[in-house]
Image (cartoon, rainbow over all chains, first blue to last red):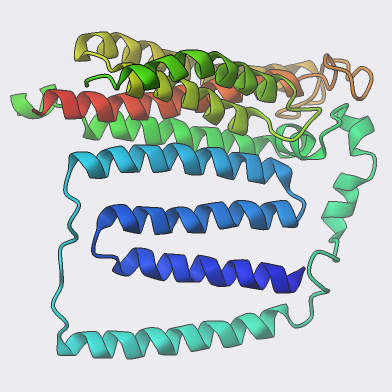
Length: 177
Length: 144
């Protein structure tokens, strides 16, 4: 299981790196799709079908929109020349990655095995949640009953995003100004 | 935006109602099976985006559609807030209180307010994503 997850994570990292360096933006987008759909497989392996459904649908819709945007704009990436500052940037990035990996190892050392631990709060949610909320799906019960505030926040984020897009993309107000 | 070829239009005709019904199913059965408001809303947006991409649409019609989706988005998030405030006043002074009878676990009409939240969040997600999509299409049409 962990081996399989590691292989899929490796694919995701390769896809992300290729997406950064692809010359053609459309192939970069396809490589980006590898990352998203591998994440779906990871969610399914970790027994989270709710997340997997959301991820696969959102990934597909955003991919369609981004393909439409790329086909209507430019397919060539703007190239940067490699300068001497970039060497410094790469060294700094590698140092930061090393530091982050080290502290991550330190932080997860006292935890239990992958997927095995339950915290005190999770136990309180899991025990008798179906009777308390009446919802057979525990995830929905947590989302809309125990953690209603979080769901309201997420919906507000979407609302704000739509308002922001409408504000940025209006043409009439810009012409008048 | 121009439409696509006849094959794409026919396949869209055949598929779009099934996709829409699947989205509605995911939303309304959110408290029984995996999924819920967020996933179902995104699937419903897929149906609408498929129609717009396959058949094409002129900017005038899209403006009307954008006004409708924007209004339904605002109304559905307002309904979520109203439901939460009703829960606050009905019992216990707790925001997001589940005040309706929970019924039998596993039946379609059960779990109190959870299916209502599911439906309104699904409407909110669908309308918000559709508004963003239509705004992008209109921007492309009008900036020519």
